[in-house]
Image (cartoon, rainbow, N blue to C red; front, side, top):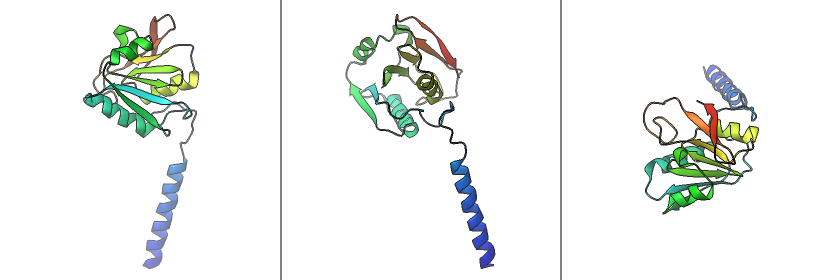
Length: 159
């Protein structure tokens, strides 16, 4: 009986080890983690915004490096500094390397941004859509926009 229990625990351990090592392709666009952990990450948010805090927790869970969350009195000054068009603004702004990530953007879009490194200012998911990271409710279809250097914007991706 002890032998069967030992064998069961041993095989279970091997299966867990295999599962943990598989599907670890850092070049794939997934929702697991941000591709390039060498980028400095700062999330600017309003002091009392609950959904912003939830997004910070979501982001920290996906990003291996230190994420710096900064509470600001006037979030509009951050949006002005990074030239985020008014129609694309949300409640918080994340700065990753040379890009801004505006709003409740899922990690898949951030991975795409960091992998492809397009010549744009950043990406945005306007408003506070239901089911987005940090937002309650059922997921809606998301359109994430890419903001060009002239502040025009185009669809970057859909999720």
